[in-house]
Length: 324
Image (cartoon, rainbow, N blue to C red; front, side):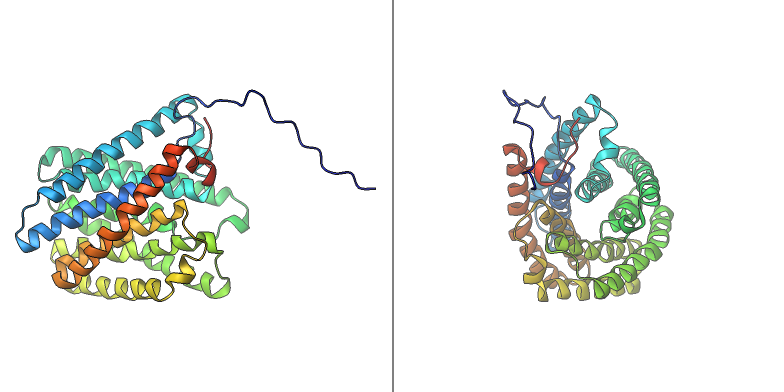
């Protein structure tokens, strides 16, 4: 006769976590999205000759929010440094920490009009952290069992995220760095696109993970933005066309993409949309205006909801964040 499973009794009183003991990396993708939105608003002000106060206010507020999030995560790491490796073992953790590093690279672009020296130092620090993250994730993947080595859209954040540094490289007087980042990341992005397409054809991704597919839009947008800034107009147009096809696919299959309902992984929808809006504003301002309006309607509500989930204490459990 089978016996019912025996579970340990709940601990009483319940264990109370220390402050920031379980800060979830999932807070960083929507913050990166807000940063991208601020940069897109700055581009819109430049294109149309408008007052850039709104863009700078959005960037300033986002930098403040991002700084608080970084301090909260560092407070977790200070309690037990090995918690970083544990966060990198789960997909939301990998995506979140990659978005945090990319946010530092985006910060360099935000700082450039105010301090070239500050932008340069931030850019160098961001690229160094991006390299460290890429190597660490590559090692973790190689040490994982074969079934855990499948290519995911999050690979773009780990191995193509360097391209965000190209947004400020030319502006701070390092145009060849921008060219180098573009040439180095383009083949990686192409390889991830091809591998991901083959995987989708072979096996439909589960509904909860489908929002991550929006990340495929980000490399096309960022490569195009860097190319446009460096004067490679034809390549920027090609990137815009590739991004347009990806965006069209995301729109056509939006119900399938979001079938699982709202989740913290919706943060992956934010920064690709903001980046593509920025590219369109640089190439075709009217199309960019439509995308910017869509970004304004979509990104802040997603960010607010994820931050509310963090404040209420549910985000860490929903994303399987490690505990220090």
